[in-house]
Image 1 (cartoon, rainbow, N blue to C red):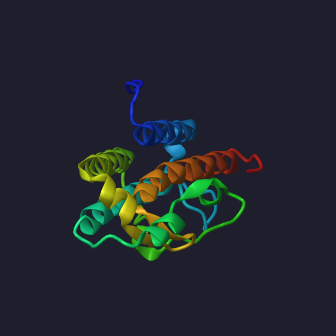
Image 2 (image 1 turned 135 degrees about the vertical axis):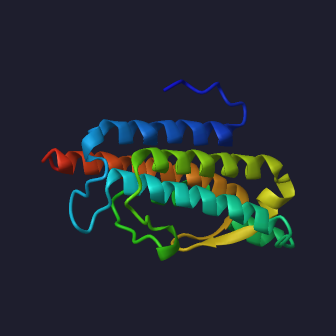
Length: 182
């Protein structure tokens, strides 16, 4: 794996950093066990990766959809800034969250297919971010199912924090598969 070049945009740099950490977590799971669920009600490392790809793809579609929507008032935008508290909630693993059906993994994909899905979804997300104007990023709001309204710029940041959350989950999967406490 090569190290990506330094990214001058802090938000893009965060995406690169957290994706690298996520992939490193997946790589810590023995290759022959990445598709194995540590328990019937837990996702495998590959299912977690598929879920991460689905989130990226959804955020990329959201950016394209909202580009044509009218801006919301400044007060609503201010209230929808992600902020440290809500980003921290996304990153934390102390509360189990049930993902909405549309972003749950289908499972059964080979590792190469999952990694390709992740790469394509991230490319689409970055392209959508780069194509969006600051007005679209900062004056359009979409509700998150657990933390409420978030600006589109916040959704891009959420994708990075989401990677961090699930890197921890994959580390838990690795520990459970190895018979260690998570």
